[in-house]
Length: 144
Image (cartoon, rainbow, N blue to C red; front, side, top):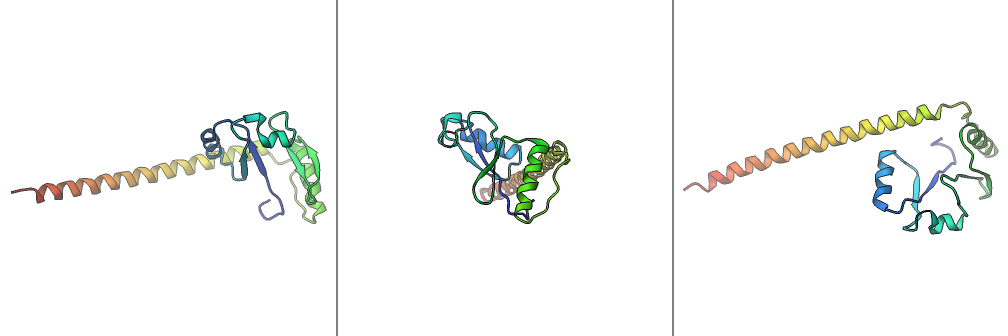
């Protein structure tokens, strides 16, 4: 749905910002996510939106009206299809295996993280080799 007029916004209630950053990276969260503050579930965003349970979802239409709350699975897909159709965008989401999509995205993110770690290790090895060469040259320069 990347090419559709659609946005996902998240609010995280973890009390520690570093923990949130780790979760975002681990789960490959690509949408905008706001921190609810050190108060956690009693933070300013959840208080303003009267959120009492986690996760809470709101489906807001193009006019800013909350149309649905706390939908999951096919019910959420149907509601998204309806709202997108109202805006003239046909999408087909019902029956999509979201669990398989999530697993595939997580696997892809793990592979990407492993590749990045391998690149970092290669750079570290190159840095070590450069340091060794510099040390050897320095040793030669120090000879009487």
